[in-house]
Length: 125
Image 1 (cartoon, rainbow, N blue to C red):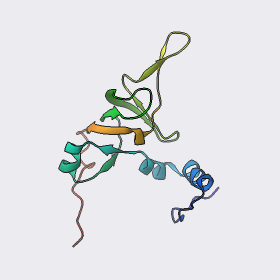
Image 2: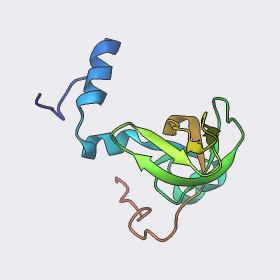
Image 3: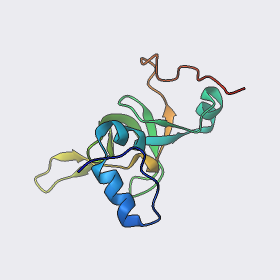
Image 4: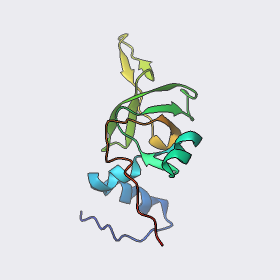
């Protein structure tokens, strides 16, 4: 199926889900953003940012609400984030990461090794 970046938003949830499902990875990367906490929001002058491996985040929704940890893996295909310390115990006794949506997280510390990530943006006017 072809994918158009010029897609106009439909009000039908079915079409919105299909759009997200069929999106290529470079578009799915844009879906992987989470809000910044108040301190980072004022420092970087932006409300949200794409999550990255190495960021420290706090879980705001779900059964792991309140837990903080470092992002171990970001899965673009599934649209999920895996966090250190947010694990479930499997029936054989081993532990497995619990997948979380980035919209349910707040970034508390950013990974600072990536210099291009928060490069100052040009302002209009």
